[in-house]
Length: 101
Length: 271
Image (tube, each protein chain N blue to C red):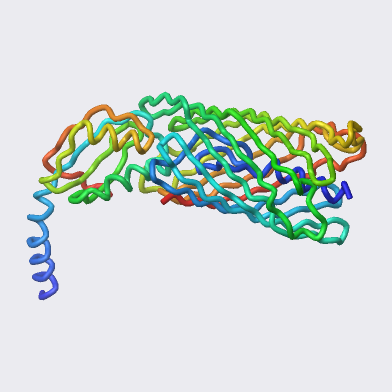
């Protein structure tokens, strides 16, 4: 019983932190292999407030889960993708992060 | 003496600098690393022809000056065995560069062209028998094309290698390499999953005769063609790739042992 209570308390405690996160989805051209996309992961994970990184290669979308305060300008993203060897197209924000990875 | 030299000459040609995890095993691709990124690569290479066998352990570090421009430095240690005799030692230092001058980024695909260049310096000094390249600086230029999609990939490259004149005034024959490769990925890639690809390469090598004071060496130069199945497996920034070169055509001048096989296994990290 104590274990269950502890689990409930932990879950309740952790929920508000994730609720404040958002997802940024970036459309990209040229992303086709996981090992090549590592440069993107490295560049995004260096940014304060960025928590998770993933890529849907078929859809050409890079997913970033980040704190609400994180904002990217198109100029910033163009440069990040250029330095990683890809072409940035557009971005859109979603209020919550995907569960995957 | 030439018998001892021959595999070393060949080895200088087939150990490719400007490596990349996502390219073919025995020929260069146009792939680079991200700006500010490092590529650390180590490989085991074996080649056998007749009674001669050479094993090499090589290593290379490359740096991405931009996402399209890579510079690298590499070295190897070779273990040469011929009819019971051994001749081991460090090979020459190699400096390499790759510049991807054209890139076509598409949805779930990328196509690119790169210029390649490398210089093999005259640094090997501790072989009991001096290598034929001693006293010579060699240079190579080339062009590499690559197309990568989620399932199929294709590559092609052409290189010209200038082999310098050595301390014994032997002008070693220059070489031309022409390669083509296809890759098949059986499962669509996911970022947090192992990515596997099967490769098949066709590698051709054309070598001019060696020459000294205007006289050609009879037992030097010729043409060899290889069919090379291979694979690569990557997980995020780590890669393992390997393959075997199987000779399918050989037209070597004079009396020379044709290649039996060559083998390459490469481990690579990006960071």
